[in-house]
Length: 478
Ligand code: AMP
Ligand code: MG
Image (tube, rainbow, N blue to C red; front, side, top):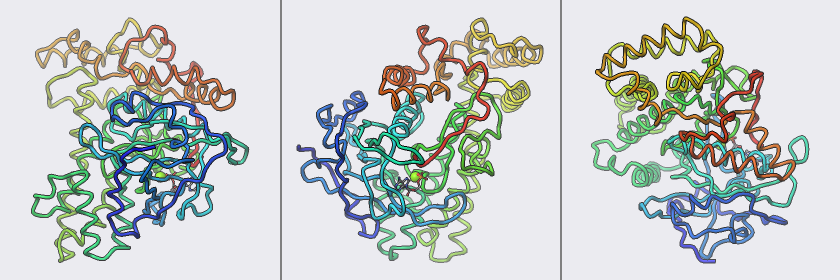
């Protein structure tokens, strides 16, 4: 089958990747295919491409690779690499954007260590669902093109149905790729790698006096925006290791991620995050920590005098909290229906969060309760403390020359009615992977791709489970 894939990454030094073919699978079957995404990027894929999407056949002229990278995992440096993902190549979209086409779960690679190179159907459907949900929420993310069942079993303490996800991303270059490259490449090669990343993701940095510093600034800005968007919808990535942070500023590597229901800053879902390193409220600080690691790798390209390089890089990293806060305030202003910035906004926003924490209120519903008090009637919205905050909000709307009515209209565009509620995600995955019943999963994908839309048919999906979901745990590496 012909498909003109590009292999620009392979013009870089060979130590950055390994040539490796997907391992064929027994009996591939397309479980879900994202035709809308295929159309968007004009990829001539369709349901008949099962052999390509399973790795059983390669498109003509395709030279697949696994990419090498390192990473700080829970603060500790390790050499990693694509242990179960194989990059088929890059594709140029109609918007002249280069995107990676990658098969996740396509078999072992030289970086697999003790892993089997495979993935379970349930984990790949989970990534499909949550990445499409983030996209629906207008949050930068890798996309999911398809999930193919392999017809083989995967062993993870028990037997699971095996699957492969086709992932589309601006690239899979990570903070960890820089950590690897700076250690493995000569100065000249490392500069070539830098230029490649700049050309691909931040071309304007090329004209800067110090391109490496400009790149660091751009990535810092992108990450500040991304994390503020995560925080604004209650998304917890769960495993923000430096190898899971994309240079392009997209959400990547969906493992133990989940959305928070009851607001609490210390919320953690991942079964392996015992210290709460990647808890909800720690995400901005961890992003800054990761960016400091990136800065460290860029020092030799910033200035030949290490002291000067360090000072310049430090100045960029120290700007992160301010960039993050102003970005967060912007997204929160939108969520609260305000068009102008007023000095007291942050106080009112923090009072709202403090109220949610005290009342154990649902994060998403709280905004919907401001938007439509008639419709959202949890007991805690009957309390005086809520009425007091709400009247302060109304007063604030008037202070910018608007009204509560106007603000409520503005809010409709920014407050999702639907997030991937954990209990629904689990129920849909259970039915899809254990009973081969995709109906709920498909419905949930549709609803989450349109999260701002009123949808009376799925009214109950707006709400957390009545009994709450304390103790909900997610697992990575499945
Ligand atoms: P993560 O932090 O979950 O994104 O993955 C950490 C590392 O483990 C990456 O290098 C993955 O490629 C690798 N990995 C995860 N699962 C497997 C598997 N089943 N087989 C081989 N490598 C894996
Ligand atoms: Mg990863």
